[in-house]
Amino acid sequence: MRRLADRLGSGVMSLYWHVDNKEDVFDLALDAVLEYRGSPQTVQSQDWRGEVVHMLEDWRASMLRHPWSASLLPRRALGPNILSRLELLSKTLSRAGVADADLNVAIWSLWNYVMGATITRAGFDLSDDDRAAAQKRLEHLSERYPTIERCRLLLDDDWDGAFRKGLGFLLDGLSPK
Image (cartoon, rainbow, N blue to C red; front, side, top):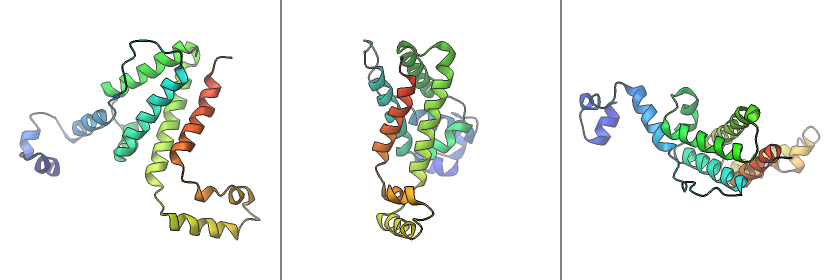
């Protein structure tokens, strides 16, 4: 709280006029990060997949700009911004034909995908040289790990492309048959 007060140019005790404790600060900060700045849905698009991809890419990008947010989200109260995101996602999936009985599973599957991809990306910060050295070591172990060596897994740094393609795999499973 002292560092926050210093950064804001106020006294520590002044902060308590606005929040009860440090946990409230975390809740407010996290909710501010998760505000969706996408276009409001005044006209219902026929491209539900495009809408979902845009929403989830925006969510991931917001958290990557603030890497602390992804690890904090599962432990915090859900504020109005994340609830608005979840409502918009639910509404879009429902309109796309996802049955109410499957809607929660769809939401949590997409949530888990976004959170996992974000935490992995934020925490996996190897230099190009480190990745190349790790791939080189893997070449010497290709008898034991032939598939990941052949696919050059450790050199793949297309995080955004992998996120989008993986999201496509998930959305394929949600598409109406």
